[in-house]
Length: 177
Length: 108
Image 1 (tube, chains in turn red, purple):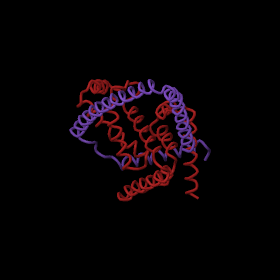
Image 2 (cartoon, chains in turn blue, red):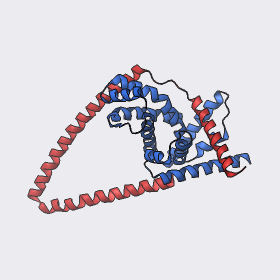
Image 3 (tube, each protein chain N blue to C red):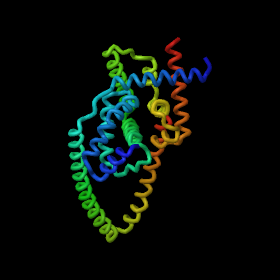
Image 4 (cartoon, rainbow over the protein chains, first blue to last red):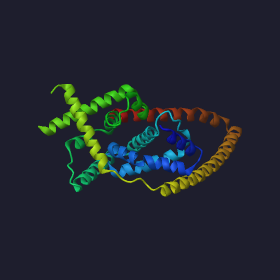
């Protein structure tokens, strides 16, 4: 975290509204893109991004700088998503997942972009594995860091990543056959 | 292709496709003014909520304290029974909710 960012965080923690607004604005797109990949549902990603902003406003004084500000936001957003999913009934979970993927697919096709087998397989992956694979292989976090974000042991993260990659490999192989 | 190469190829594909997904959702962030007013509004509603909760806490405390004292004075047997039942019910509830969470985690 650079000095300017540290200064902004410090001012935001002291109640400076402008600094907090700048901080949130700078990280909004990053957070939204992360949530798109986690949820595979643009509407839900937007809702959780907003909830994360509000939670961040409430908790900014508790941020201790031990991880980067973006990692802190990712932690809040991931936990909000897991909590929300836990409250959904199974049918609702499935229905929303289907709608979300359809919407992303439409976004690709409306821009003449190809919807790939990899994205399809990724969207079918259980969210616990998807989050683990995403944080490990796209955002480059260590197993321990992911464990802290998800509040689970590093060993569990490792097995989720391995299971997720195996599942992806299997689905892609089936698609190619 | 050996297993390592296969893994590398999969990770490469995965990263590329997630990058493509990112590009599709390259949205502009909300304006500074909108964020500032959201922060101010949230702060106000939080204060309001805290005030309400504090008031509710005081009212409930007064009711509970007076009813407990009344119960203790008039029917001490019921008071002592409740003292045993309430912690036991809380413990059972906690165990059940933990077990449910654990089960959901295993299913995921």
